[in-house]
Length: 213
Image 1: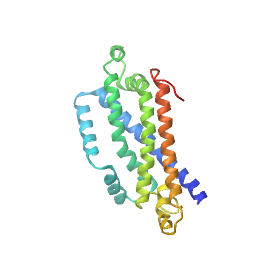
Image 2: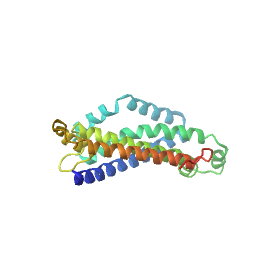
Image 3: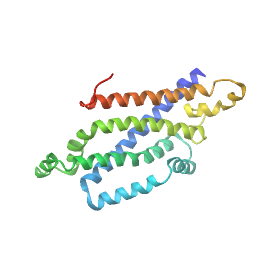
Image 4: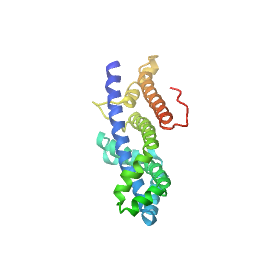
């Protein structure tokens, strides 16, 4: 059981990091683009994202995974696609506050293009809150992939993640063994640890808050 938990934790963390990275790249890029271009581009992208967010996340993921097959690449792309809509809203909100600043107008007067403004002006000023949001999305990805695996639509044998280990050992509860409890505790420990790191990072990035760590 211990060796399976070690392997399942590695699979869970690898998939979750990949999902969070891909979701942040896509969501941030389109969020910055919508805020920078504005007008009909912003309205169109925002309405599409609102329509996607209207669907329950777990239901949409189950439909897509069932239709495409529960392989690891399909899980990564599906969850990253769903999660990118949340990242889009955060990135767009941050960019909308930054795009009206004077230094953005100076960059436009200098003749800088949209790409330069997005990656050299907006991104550095939105990095701290986006980094904190990355930790939250990483935690969400762990819980999401574990829930799908528990339902039998996640990582398939012979591979296993922590959610699959909980499902495989559920019968142990009938005999009084703690086999399904251990992987569940690992999920809780990882998510709590990441949240503590996010809180620490937010305090370090905001000089107005006291550093208690």
